Image 1 (spheres, one colour):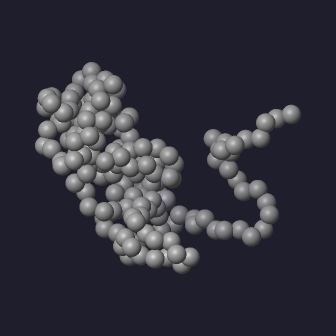
Image 2 (tube, helix red, strand yellow; image 1 turned 90 degrees about the vertical axis):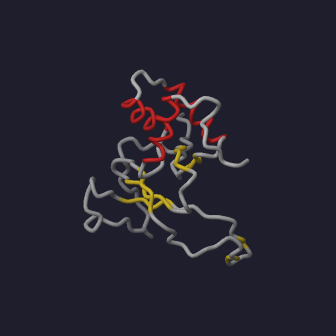
Image 3 (cartoon, helix red, strand yellow; image 1 turned 30 degrees about the horizontal axis):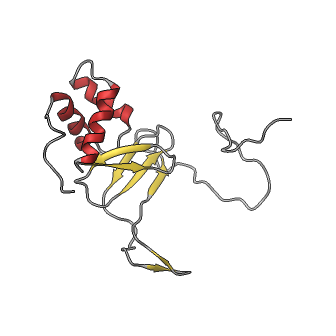
Amino acid sequence: MPKTNQVGKRNTAQRRAVLDVINQAHGPLTVGEVLDQAGKRIPNLGIATVYRTINLLLEAQQIRAVTLPDGQTRYESAELEHHHHFRCTRCNQVFDMEGCMLQMPPGTVLPGGFVVQDHELTILGTCPKCGDSRIATPRRSCSHAHAHARPRNFRPRNPRPRK
């Protein structure tokens, strides 16, 4: 389906605001972030309107959905060239990284016979606002058995039932 310049059948102020917010972002946005930013332009903008508009923009191929490793779906302009993302582990903000850091074009055959179709990369670290990345402590892999400190809100994916 070719891209269209219209957002649905009517080009309303709400639809323009949602598209402008996504197009002007420096990284993919969640629905909540789109609502917060577009709501500054359009008073009383509702979450249902944002969801409907995002679906129309996806259908018109003006934006694309990006699902990061944390499972959260975000949205960015479909006009962007291939790029990767950086997620700050302190503030959880996601930023676009210019260009491609991996020289792995489609059709590349990896060891074991795996054939690359496409790739996505999300780099985790600390953004400039949250701290100097040059002094951040790198995570080291351990070969010894012990429990590492976990964040306060840590919950295992499949907790064992208590007896």
